Length: 415
Image (tube, rainbow, N blue to C red; front, side, top):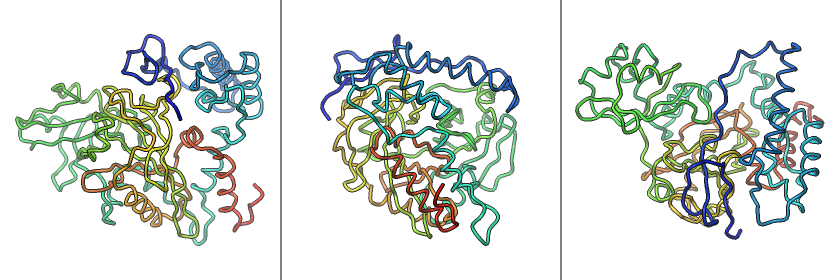
């Protein structure tokens, strides 16, 4: 694709050239403090959903950060037609199409029939990933993926490179994973701990929520980001149980794109009859001062050409964070054609690991490329198809057919 501009949220910090002379990006508006959710199935729950959907539709029509085109150089549909299509999607699926613009559906010449609602995607994905009807079992193994500590132990036991775990933390104690006895959280501040550069993430977290870097310097002082931290400040960050792992060093080619975060491959594999194949690939790249690469935290997604092991096309911000860009906003590196090191090895690694979990039909793997090769950070049975629908054509038809083929042996091909 040619040089295109990136659309940003008003009032956000300006970043360097994304193809338009001045481009602004920034965090999406933070949600208000959430009230307790009403009981499922109640009239209050129905009213809550209706009110939320109404607000989402209003934002999709009138919020400048959420209603700008990702293709501003192309003719756009009129506002009444856009509203009619948004309402039609709502009537068919029961949900607002929050990704209407990043799918490019606002372009006058575009009619996409290859995207699907999240509810439909989630239903098909979970129907196969959470199934209990594969004899002789009456259980599944998604827990191996959902608990980050358990996954790390599983991968390490097979000799699969993965970040080394240091300890499990919560607001009260440190549970060491090197044979030492558990101790109070204050043990990290007693000056006896060896230097370590690590990263904390929730044991059951998603999309980088709550993750933060935690290191201890040569004098035994813990730091978060570039600031020394007190026990009280660390305790405030540890809401729930966290896994503390050694921080990975990434390959120089990925660091050149954005050095502040470990930029990871998202490889989606499907396992049928004990054989795994990789069907989709994307690179997630951090931006600005962020220490994570997640799309939901302001990072970019870029398609991967699985045959060539290179990036393909432009990068996309999540709605509310920016638009579409041919180059990285900080490094200025052009995405299309950019080579990914150790890509064939990464593909082989995720296929090998998935074949140890044949009962899970599809997995979205997060893979870091280090100077010594690929390292699998985690696997997600609840991977999000939106990234693939943004980056790939024909996703709905291909995904539905794959699911039907997987269901056929048990007589459910017509679903």
